[in-house]
Amino acid sequence: MTLTEKILGRHAGKRQVSPGDNIWIDVDVLMTHDVCGPGTIEIFKREFGKDAKVWDRERVVIIPDHYIFTQDTYARRNIDILREFVIEQGIKHFYDVGSPYYKGVCHVALAEEGHTRPGEVLFGTDSHTCTAGAFGEFATGIGNTDAAFIMGAGRLWVKVPPTIRFIFEGEMPAYLMAKDLILHIIGDIGVDGATYKAMEFTGDGISGLSIEERMTLCNMAIEAGGKNGIIAPDDKTLRFIKQRTKKGMDVVYGDDDAGYESSRIYNLKNIEPVVARPHSPDNKAIVREVQGTKIDRCYIGSCTGGKLEDFKAAARILRGRSVKVDTYVVPATTEVERRIKEEMIDGESVYSVLKNAGAKISDGASCAACLGGPTDTFGRLEGSEVCISTTNRNFPGRMGSRQSQVYLASPLTVAASAVRGVITDPRELM
Image (cartoon, rainbow, N blue to C red; front, side):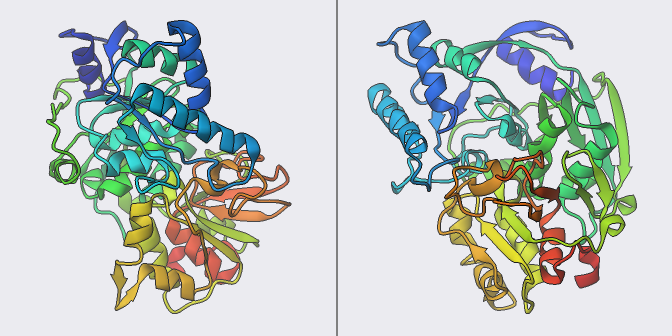
């Protein structure tokens, strides 16, 4: 069996499962946030009873992150609903905004707080929950109804997906990042090329990636229609997790003779920096093909591009330079926010490099403009701007204005473009 099949089989209590099988599986962690949490809670109480208790108060994780730094009445009410539910249920893991426990973007926060563990099953009411597949677990996004059922029952009816294997050979060049790799894949297979399929990433090129870069890769599996993205755990994975949790791990690996629906092989030396042009993640172009395209704004942030390594990459380009267009920087979590002030590049903190280059840095960690947000959201697109961004989607209106155009790219490419004021290949400034 593949890694995905083996995890699902174990959680179904079955020795063997195959693609297409419909099975009941036990759930290890359920995550929800301020956008979908209130709806999930409403369905849970309607179906299980107004006095019902969640199946396990230590396995439900609630992380406000999307519409939090806003005066919008409805957004603030959503947070109040979460707070009331947490008190009522005695939920242990609640990272409330404005509290000492606040974290930021749920997908990065889950990893930082030790909620992502090999061999487990994690569901979340957010499509980018597949980020956690970087830790060798089955992680995927679900709707409010499924989440409400898990809240009450602790399990879910799932169809086993077939697996596509993506093999990366060679050593990662300094001018490439995981964002380039996943945009390259999505450009090849399309936004529906992996619909309800597991996307397993492997090869020497993947082994060489950091944990944060692996998270970026798995994060955007959903943009190809994938059910989940997954990477087999290794020493890097185990070290990362053991630093963040004392919980035991049931590490799982796929079988050597596992059957894959298909395999694609990429040599890293043949991949160049890429962008996704408006208005779809699969509208791929090599950066040099669109080089010189005028931009009005740059954005570095989100679960895809707001991690420490993303900002360190941008700082390598921005050090000693100034941005020519508005450049917004939003750390994904409070830990990232802290660490960019501690991490040094040639004697200067990453934060200082970004600030001195003229970037506008958010006062708080959050999703911010990645999902548009209320009109007072930091970095929200308001007009017909052309923006190049490290986020994960570029549909019309995704970052606010329907009239805007959003190019998706790596932090290196976004930073290089910020310096020139036009889309720029990062190799020219490295």
